[in-house]
Image (cartoon, rainbow, N blue to C red; front, side, top):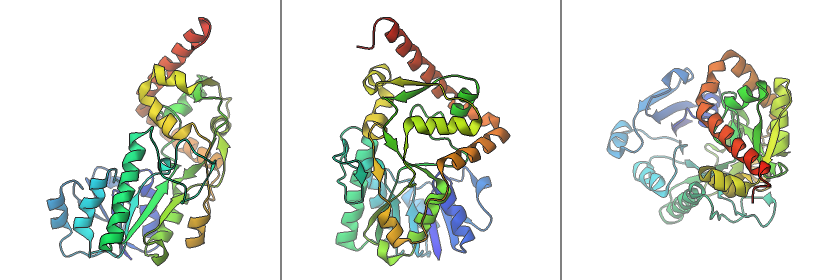
Length: 336
């Protein structure tokens, strides 16, 4: 197939790109060209800002794709502008939404694609819900061949997942230095992590798949862990002990309001995403990389690239500040 990936070099999409090339697809990428050195051999690149629609139309003049996937759409306008460019020029348009769009607080821990979309706590999620509404309206009213994909927390060997402050490899650096990490609540809420190579198998199985048109899918790992288990698994991969400090979400809200939306609107709840639908449409999809193996891959990458921790320095400093505030609150008789 001839496919166009808008983005194509991010944490999620880089694995999609690499797998698509291995599968023999003709892969075109449209982005600003900031990570060209990371592109696999065989890809074709269009250096265009997706927000410059006139430049985008000019670059794509005369081109037709069997599938177009936008990994960097965040608001309804992104989908509406894509429809102007690709309506009648592609047999399928896939857009990335988010599993954080599912109902918060949840009525039930088990989540399927029919779970209502409602998130009053996080603007990011509300934007994704509005994006989905716009995409499905285009499908119903204009025949725009939409497929919606909702990733949950997806990571790669070059990105370590966490709960606060975008630490990534700074988490490993802290653990090896014996420094503590903050865990929201009691650390017992349930979560699923997805290695990007696993996600790519499910996503690429939707490309050109007629059963995917007009449908929504989430694609996650099947392994369910508590947040405490997530951090202890990281520590086990590093050969160290995790030092975890449990902090109430309400205290985090008061101490660092910027971190609150992503907790209250996503990570603080126990959710188990049922992957039955993606498995029924893409039978080859199985999440084969358990979290421990994924953390070992991250560890091996970090051992070769210790400088990667520098990107999380500011977040690590914010974490130290939060931990200091919590320690002070405990000393004066509690956080209330």
